[in-house]
Image 1 (spheres, rainbow, N blue to C red):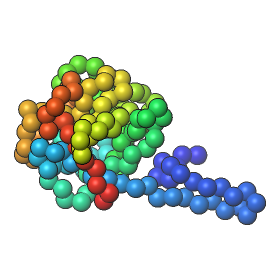
Image 2 (image 1 turned 180 degrees about the horizontal axis):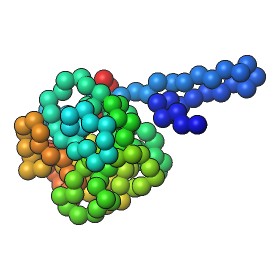
Image 3 (image 1 turned 135 degrees about the horizontal axis):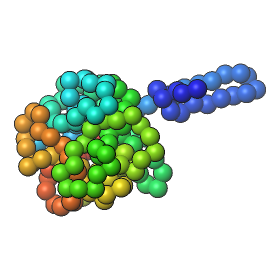
Length: 161
């Protein structure tokens, strides 16, 4: 049985009760633009693009951080239940970031690395960082993986929403 909407449950066999704990969701905001990670067009499909947009409170802009072990997390979109994913497990600079059905792949595992009061999100499979392409500041700017640097387009915050 899959309970993806209740990743944490408590089962009390003595009383026959099952209690689910609702996940906590966050908006993930780019430092340089103040825009958030957004699954385009509220899509629930595999391969839907993830770009930055102004915060509007939609489920396509909310992410759950699920423990993936070893200091890594999976970012699961509230609207679709799919994971933030580097397309095809690519290790190349400029590889697109999409949503895809959650699995065990390290291209869906991210590490928060402190950079002052902000964080970089580093992909486990490549060691590369989540990056807003060309430090774009407008709605619809692409998000990719790229070699980690000091740019504010690779620095993020998360705020419970």
